[in-house]
Length: 107
Length: 123
Image (cartoon, rainbow over all chains, first blue to last red; front, side, top):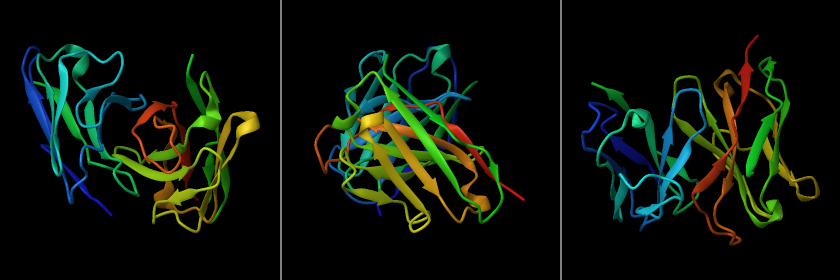
């Protein structure tokens, strides 16, 4: 099974900051990677799929990049509503697997 | 409106059984594979199971294989998860999620999620 490892596990930042979250796959997954945002008490929300394609309705301050084993999610100018937990997920092969999550907190 | 609504979560004793349901609306249900994903309290997301658009193919996480059974009724736009031999470690919020790819046998990202239903396994 492919393992997904995110870093950091938590991150403190301020509104207006640019932040980057990294996700590494234990083997190559081409571009079969998604990013989700989860706020407390809410279901996850798909932000990005195919490593870099923004889901409809997601603000353009979110962007994704990478292929193979190394991926990044960047938020260019943090807004208050962006403080949440972010998960990467591979869907290259079974079982689809999530990273452990990165909690983005207000500094 | 595209929507998934889970139900059936309760408190159950270890070794017990439970069936979760997920009602879909707002999209052509039988075009898409469907998933169950769970989240233990304070923990991350864990994929549980997948069923193909026609129910002909199913996949399970090793942690639930042999104990859980996924099924669907396309005439009712509904997804199910039969959970047997429940353990304390199955305690979690269970989400159903829609696969965004309408191609049989191909995995996609999960573009629609329900609000979840809570399963607690405790004596």
